[in-house]
Image 1 (tube, rainbow, N blue to C red):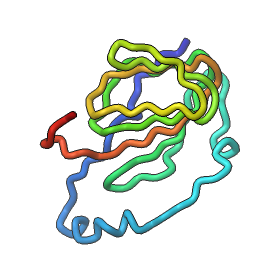
Image 2: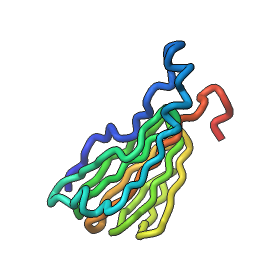
Image 3: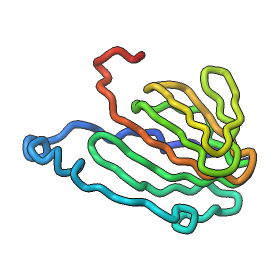
Image 4: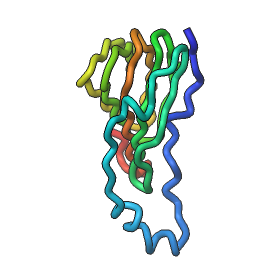
Length: 139
């Protein structure tokens, strides 16, 4: 089993210059479709792969594939995050509790929630991260 040290849960900084602040709405005005995901990011034997689908000042959406037995060790994120399983089976650990997740299952994690995952079989999932104001209540 490959225990990859994860860097996928890092939110981009929301700090911006005055020029960027004036054009902040521009990054939210570009809409896009993402179809045929399984052909664009194929499953790779003994590997974890990813590709960014959407990234702007507010959120990031990344598609992942994990071959059977691949794992992401415990880590946290500064973002609120949603994991949606598209295919396969993931053993997801959060708050000391393990759950087998299958296609259609969704996990919500508040910022700084410790979590880990292992692919029980070849798996595809989508990670959506939303930048939050860290100065507000973390509940």
